[in-house]
Length: 272
Image 1: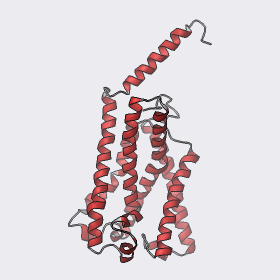
Image 2: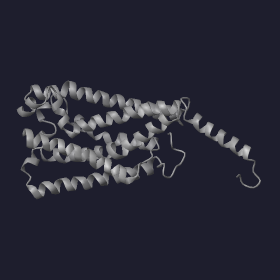
Image 3: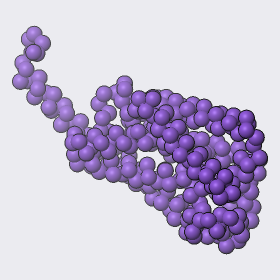
Image 4: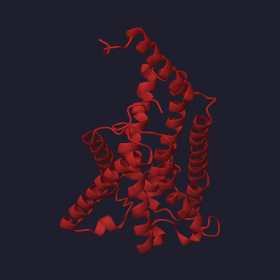
């Protein structure tokens, strides 16, 4: 029942007009819309190039120069030994996220209020919250930490003549600025904290099982320091990594709210 003194038909008409104007603002003719969608496409192309370069050139160079342990060359067909490294997996995650963002842009533009539109937006936001931001942040931090201890584990000096070390570092470090720009321009609806954290920890657990299988079953230690860690320190290391991952999840949640406006606070951001 409408409020006293208001016409229900007029109220519905004005509400429909407001919704129509909001949809037009998200259309292809809107400069802000075009800017955000173009940015997603450019970042997707950037990560596509990085992954092609990584698998098509750098991985082959590492293998042919004997910089990959023989047991890895024997176990992994071709260049798939890169799938054991979280730095490479992170680049694929970023590629998938921005590819899906491009898909979401197209679906939400053509049918923003459809079930397909809602589903693509929901998966995009969950994937960013649970996987892309916390895993990407953890990879960047550990990348620099391990590089400081032994750069050969991250980027052998023998490759400097082909690919400058500073450029390799920049490519990995760009992960966070690009995600922050995305958060600034797009309003994301974060999932419940339980759902998001379970997703992040579940993904990390799957990777842990993978590298422990390689280590104990195939004697391929992707990160050699894990081989020398004794029982209590081994458990402590992964416990600390889990806590750090959860912290990064919460940081991402807060940053998304501050930079772009979380949907928990902005109800009109469903199909942004």
